[in-house]
Length: 245
Image 1: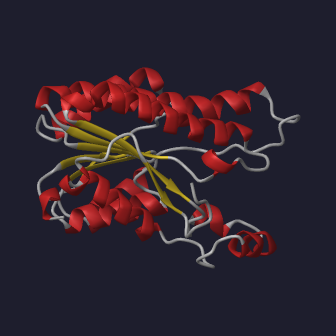
Image 2: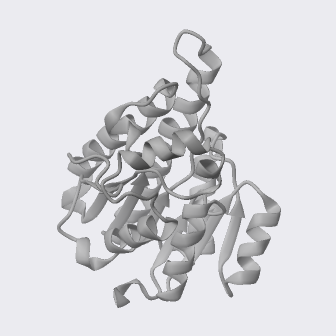
């Protein structure tokens, strides 16, 4: 995947486990990376670990500022955008009868609406270059559903359907829009899961283990590279066989 060298790539949610792995692998292949997150200390850590990486602090919940964020990122990348990886998102779990409207709206607004806006304004930049790749990170539970996550599962399923629509709209413009759907990956989030529940999850995974962030990052590299040029509107499942479409 040497074609990623000098490619200009935005990564949101860059300071989490998956984001960190994505950045390391892109960096090792020579990509020009702009990393975005909400924590100053985490962004500073990225700058220390990866020479010449660019960072922009941004909270994707600020939907009215997403166009400005893309514009600023575009300038930081010297007026060229080859790929954006929409990895940022949140959970706010509750059983449906206890879930209030704010809990529903916050997750939908951040995970789905903000991802749509990131795609929209990135596409505008990519149209000028007559090419581009958009990779949206969704989740296995967007396909299967999950207890206490009606808001989160709806947002992730929405990303999949939205990405298909965008792929149809811009395929002729040489813009590929795909999703990656991770299963249960070893991150700070899964570290908090009760051990008995974690064992129950692993028992349902044919590979009999949780995934590593690198497993997701490897899929990102493929979809960002020229090797995936004839793949569009698809979802790449990275879940150890937990869900077989």
